[in-house]
Amino acid sequence: MELSLATRTVDEHTVLEVGGEVDVYTAPRLRERLVELVDAGARNVVVDLGRVEFLDSTGLGVLVGALKRLRAASGTFGLVCSKEPLLKIFRITALDQVFPIYPSVEAATSTPDDRDGSGPTS
Amino acid sequence: MATVRLSFSPAPVHVRTARLVGVAVARRAGVAEELLDEVRLAIGEACTRAVALHRQYGLPDLVTVEMSDSDSYAVRVIDHAPIDASIGLAKLPPDELADESLTDEALTTGVGFALLAGFVDDLQVRPVADGAGTEVRMVWPVTRR
Picture 1 (cartoon, rainbow over the protein chains, first blue to last red):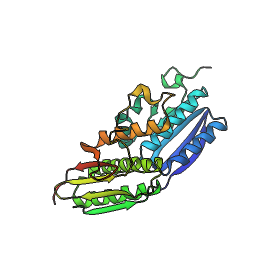
Picture 2: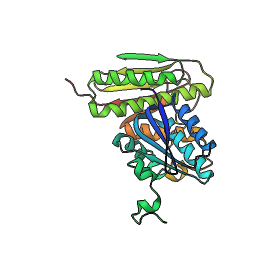
Picture 3: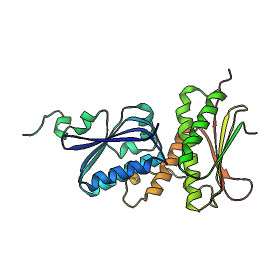
Picture 4: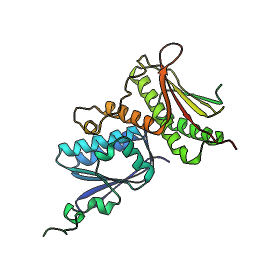
């Protein structure tokens, strides 16, 4: 299946839903979209990998590039992934220690206070 | 002797074709269903590496993938880049992966090798017998039906 990209906003976060195959052929389109989002001012970016069927080293390189770009812009970058085959790829490459990986978009877009259970600050 | 041999011009668009063929032949050879995702990823990584090297050196030569299913499922991905076969075969430590000084190419190469080494138990990377180039050889067990 070809790459699909769709963007939506959840609270303060820009969520990029990725579907299909992310490989050496399609990864440049993912990179372009992420660069466009950051250039347009997005600072809290979440990439939802829920519908990704294939992800290779080129795709991983693009995700690391986005993480670096957002760090440099004092932003945040997180991934949503709950599929075991994809999680294994992050473990084998040690990239699970580099990316914040959340099981759902809700978990990725909640504030840190929500996540640790102390509730939102007023 | 190869059961199936595929040669393709070094363009990213053809790597998907190589993956699809590689998995189809693996399934036909009797590789366990639960290993097919790993076969797909590993063949993709080896072909991506070959395509990147040919483009880096401006080589129009075809990249070759040979699949053979005699006792096990063996896949050889052959490039013709004039480099030492061991170049780029280093797993990057986690603290260097997001380091600002690491180029995208070096990151992708290091991550690609980590995936190959992590998913293929029987992996060999060696110079081709004749001329310049590297052969990445991967072997998976088959279950005879």
